[in-house]
Amino acid sequence: MPWPEDSLTEGESVVSKFRQHWKLLVVPFGWFVVALIALFVVFRWIPGGGTIDLVLTAAVIAAALYLIVRPLVDWAVTYYVLTTERLITRTGLIARSGIEIPLERITNVNFHQTMVERLLRAGDLIVESAGETGRSEFRNIPRPDQFQALLYKTREARTIDLQRAAPPAAVTSDAAEQIRKLKELHDDGLISAEEYETKRRELLEGM
Image (cartoon, rainbow, N blue to C red; front, top):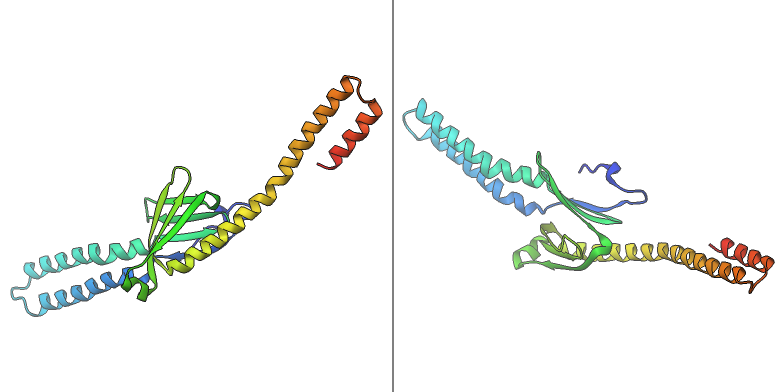
């Protein structure tokens, strides 16, 4: 499945990528069999030939394009990507659309399976997130229960990474505030220039 690597940010990597479940191909395959039978009937059993055969054949082909080719193309150009930072969906052949949900904004993930879908290992995933996206439904995905667990695990790792990245900024801000207070003490004559410079150097080295 093609996925442009230049669409990833620095340090971001793909965790999982997949199309919708193959069960979506069952109905188009059934229509394909029906189309073959219809063409056989047209050429074998319907009398008249010529224009009648041509019109009926054109009708069968038009129906096949709508009932067979269109679902196949939709399945082929719809896919989901889970990265270390985002949950992404892309769909469309010419006019394209998609959703990108930062993992840290995901608040809840649920999946739903009917009895038949459970046997086929298919189902729907419902992702709730903060922000404009709100509630997103990912329909007919393979193994939704396993993907739910993987999504939670990846989101947890993302949260830990963000928490690890946050302290240096907080420390820097705290050190800057201490230097400002230290400067005020020096300006008020409460500490000497030597004491001020020594303490300031210690704070800068700790940033």
